[in-house]
Length: 131
Image (cartoon, rainbow, N blue to C red; front, side, top):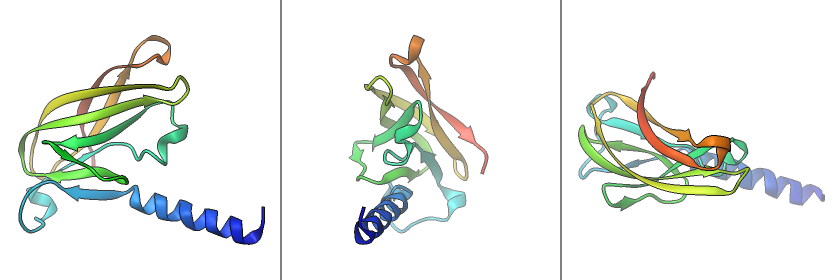
């Protein structure tokens, strides 16, 4: 591979990694302090390609996330999440709609439950995570 092509690949991967960490604000008004909102995180699609299972957050309360947005800040309360669960080894993708309740100042992570033999995701749940 030519040095210029290698450099371009490096730059593209770096940009992809940076955009993969973007957090969307899914409420109206000015950005609020972290202590007043809840953070919900899924996996970064481009980075989790080699993971056995990845959980990609697609939509929150009817708002579709852009490519590269892997987490959202929401106000406390009940929210509806649309999530894709992918198992790269088998190519299985299942879509899940879950309703969750979150609290201010807390962080949450999407977690998948897989079926036998990694044939698919049986469910997705939201777990509180440590900051």
